[in-house]
Each structure stands twice: as C-alpha cells, then as structure tokens.
Image 1 (cartoon, one colour):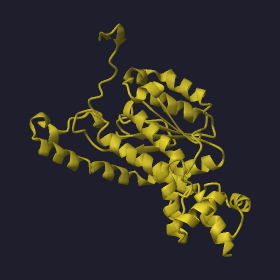
Image 2 (image 1 turned 180 degrees about the vertical axis):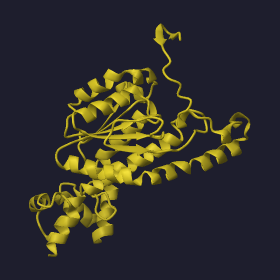
Image 3 (image 1 turned 90 degrees about the vertical axis):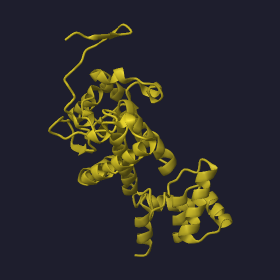
Image 4 (image 1 turned 180 degrees about the horizontal axis):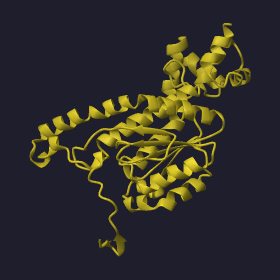
Length: 314
C-alpha cells in the first residue's frame, strides 16, 4: 500500500483499527449532523452516563493502583503519567493539580506528553508514532525501578505509550495502563491493566469525549486516593493545601474553623506559628506542641495526622 505524502512527510497506514471499540460507529448518533441542538445535547447527556459505569467496573484495578503507588511513593519513588494528544494532556492536568492541592513537590507527580509543552496547545499527533521517543523522554526524567508509570492510551495502540509501558516493565518500575478498549482487542504490557470501556463515541473516533471523561475520572481517583494514603487528607479536608493565593489561604482558615472552631483571627495566628501549614497547626492545637516539636512528632507517624492525633489519646 502506498504512503500518503503531506508537507513532504510520508505517512504509512498501519493495521485497520476499525474494529476497536473506540473507533466503532455509534449508531445512536448516526444522523448527528441533522439533529436539533437540543437533541444533540440530550444525546451527549445520555452517553456521558457511560463513563461513570465504565469507571465503576474498574474499581478493583483502580484501588490496587492506589495501594501500589502509595507504597512506591513512601519508599522514595515518583508517579509519572505518559501519553500523547488528549491522553497526554489529561495526565499533565492531573499532575499539575497535585502541588497546590496537596503541597507536593512538582517532582513527585509528573506528566510527559509526546511533544512536550508545545503539544499542550498545538496538535503533535505525528509524535505518537515514535516508539523510541517515549523511552528517551523517560530517561531524561531519570525514570527508574523505584518509580510508577501510568501509560494512558484510549485506543491502546499508541506506539509512544506502548514502548514506554514495555520499558517501564523491563526495568522493574510499577507499570499501569489505562485504555478504553477490551483486552481481547489490544493487549498492553503492565502490572495493572485498567480498562474503561465507554463504547463508541458520539463523534466516531473522537476519544476526547467519553473515553477522555472516563480517564479523567480515573486519574482523579488515583491521585487523590494516593494522597489520602500518604496522609495529606484529614477527614475530608486537604490539610496539606499550599497557601499560595488568597483563595487557598481562605480555604485554610475555613478548615481550621470547621475542625477546631477557631475564628479567622486566631486561625491566622496559629497558621503563622505553623509556618503556614494547616496540618501542623491542627497538631499544635490538639497536642500543645510547638511547631518544631510537631514536625518531629508527625515524622514519627509517617506524616499521618490521624495516626498522630490518635496516639495522643493512647
């Protein structure tokens, strides 16, 4: 079969992907271009219930991922997402939210997208076919056996992600795949294989729709679940929130009010004494310890506030 030449670049078709779930025709939307606006929106609303069902069916694999990643991060590893196009952008979005929400180092949860930063706003789909590029990108991040890799590929066939998963598995890193096609259609090399089967898209092949929604939901669960396991949540409050702007400072003050009844003035005072940390402010309040004593005490309990507070009552 001849290749297609576009702008001086030859592109050769690979195997026929028409049988993949993510590429199939959704017959509910077969006349999409002739529907009224209200019917288009109703159809989207109905179909967007399916990502929730898909994620629910993958609960065991998602839960296992959270536990395994948490163990690795406690031992000094990192979590790295890798993907191309929409899948890569979803990984970047989730990783970028961890530092302000949980006050983590930007190195702890990272994301690699084929084409790097410029691919966030401009299409770089041609790079997803380069198998060696992802391995080079991982090596540039000093990716090693202590780390965790989540390879995101909706259709499961992206060479950039497939080679990254294989490399990760070969060096002994925790390897997790997220895709939206059944395993009998595409096999992926991974320790944990998360399949989010959302069915054919309303716009055939546009996996930024249901597949992207399900993937975002799963990433939300994984990163938040990991941070809960690492002790960055007390009750349902983000006690490691980074006070980097007015909104987040306001949230910190409200957390202290909700949990220990401090008014805003007293909450600000204890935040100043705790170096801006809600977690240490809470421990200081419950224990009567100084900031430096609280730091030492919390370290003995793996920085888990609930465990530290429970030990005070023993």
